[in-house]
Image 1 (cartoon, rainbow, N blue to C red):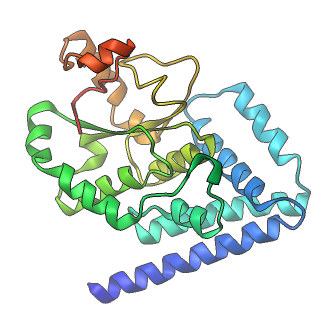
Image 2 (spheres, rainbow, N blue to C red; image 1 turned 180 degrees about the horizontal axis):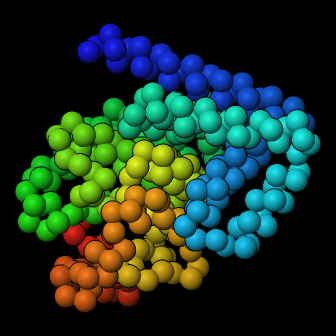
Length: 266
């Protein structure tokens, strides 16, 4: 098993290296951060448009793609394919976060530095506790990261679910939020490709915490395929109708928010 894991990681690293090569190739006349930003936007838009067609998102996609020549345009599907292959090989690992740091794309002005995978894994284990019992009692749990970055914390929790024989695709609602659109889309792409039910909110977590059964008009919401497949929309609506939600805390009442996401929030 150990050797198999080593082989899997090595193959995954090969896909990361190919992705880095393609990005550098596309960045011959464009800053690397711009290529990465466009790749994340177009990748996230391609997935999100499958469930909810938004014309402004389609227009922005075409505008961004139109900035590149035909030869460079052809590189973007190849880049996305390498992301898919890397996640396929490595499993529940923050591939895009690692690439983001490796390419030195982090925003120093906002103090970005992604949490190391080992710390995320430790926190996931600490939070797991009686998760299986809660799922059996309540149907599902919700896990929310208000400053999700590329989703390393959420991915680590999904990985811990696998290790504990908990089917996260059926029993866990993942919610990520970040003020930085680039990293929020990174999180959305990885959640989507890893089959994690949930959604990502692009917006300020302090001003616009998640609401029950409705959205902040100031934020952008991106829903994964498994959110629809596993029926989390109607499951949350049923909870609201039957008043199963936990009462708001004093802090939440103070800022006028409704952050409870249903199930048992960790």
